[in-house]
Length: 315
Image 1 (cartoon, rainbow, N blue to C red):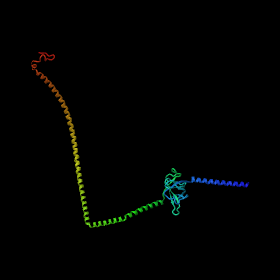
Image 2: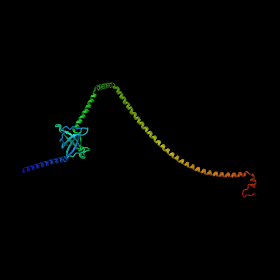
Image 3: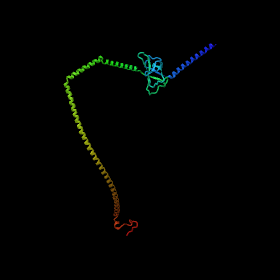
């Protein structure tokens, strides 16, 4: 009985130790997953992932800072590959960081190289909408850039060769040969008529000299005309000044004459009024005298009884 109890105790202790070790391992694994690493997602669309595997290193400036945790084909029609990378917690990943595949040319083993963003840019810590982890953008390696440049150079070289072939076609060669023949004939004709050409050139030179002399004459004439125009302008200005003075004097005389005419009009009106009054008085006197002369008897014998006024009596 004591032996069986001893075995039971030992087995219980062993089981308890195994359970504690298992719990410790699980706890450490969970803590490592949540604390020791930062998880990011990278979508590769343009680059081949040949040589990349789970556990492949993730490097920054050639230093290993994490590992590839998993990869899978992303949803959608662009055939992108989603790579999940775990990077050490102490490594800052800035906004604007780019990732590309770097492959060893000898072994063919690939790794993920991260070209970090600017040091003064904020950290990449927020996951986009619909994503579980923050996303690092896909970049391009130096080899890809060289390959692209070589490809463009090859395309440009092919275009140059094609254009050269087009230029050197049979039809163009015949045209070039005809052009050279025409140039040869033209040069021969020019050489044969060298003296005539010299005469033509001398004529052009003489004509240019005459044009130059004519231009000088025109310039002198323009200068003289300008002086004459300036003199005429000065004379016109003096005449305008004299005319202005005369107009001012005429205006003053007109004002004076207008005042005198107004005064004369007033005086004439007054005299005409007096004359009219005198004429009316004379008319009244003449009317009275005419009335008296119309009756001579009254003048000789005096007025009759019926012609006496109030209070008058016959003598």
